[in-house]
Length: 375
Image 1 (cartoon, one colour):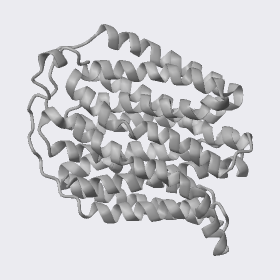
Image 2: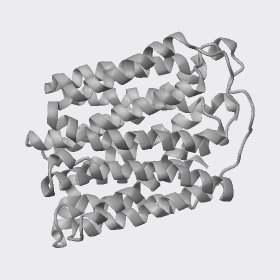
Image 3: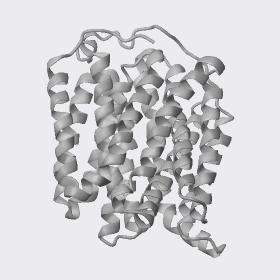
């Protein structure tokens, strides 16, 4: 059961990374760098709406069919981005990114398909396995961006069409893989852990959800401006691909370690580590130079800790709701990112990140909750 879930998620990640990076550059050149984040904002809003839609489809049709429908919407979005790249109106790019976001929502929520199939005490490790396996698509996808430009040029298409064609092919392959997903619920309404020492280090569900939201918001705000930063410094898609790959490796590669820590020690220390890494990576990003790319890796792992640490707390009826909240708030960060970057670079963005992360760090440290979340 895990293989098609993993493959579809990996392919969708590759599609989203390629389309997001190139759409930012396309709008920066066509309109202005200050509004370059708007296509990604559309993708984020699409993920928020898609999360709610997939949640409703899951309740009506089952998780497997809901995931397939989400990927199908993503295919339509990928097609619209290709049309924009070959000369269609720019408005289609925003619609296409919105629909691709729905496919991204299916990919993100697919981690719960894995969680359904294992004993509750191993939920975090099951979810982390899906996230970890997505590394190949998310980190490997950017390396195909530059070759895809040459592919498009060989057929007389604009160079920018290449990465969008790559995204379309990847999301279509994700749809095909999703047709093989079969979901069997292993257990429900069972305590996640019977280890009372781990339970005592858990955090309240609302606070865990807030950490997920802030962790994602900070990550999206900083990463939306990375393509503009690279473009302004004359870096080509090859260098940008390396930066994005380092970041996505941080997001996914160490997921098994995160899942083991959650199941072994509880979510609270994992969330604390995630918030701490957000602050540390921000300091390094401001320094730029040789530490810039490693800092993007740390930012990715900070997101991983916050995201999986919070996910392990959620009951079934909250999965799609919290996912929608995360991406709705992140849409604001995406739209504002390049505007704030144009005002003060990464210094302003990291200052905003610290303002959001520090209060949560204090609250998580002071307010553990000795409760067990049930599914």
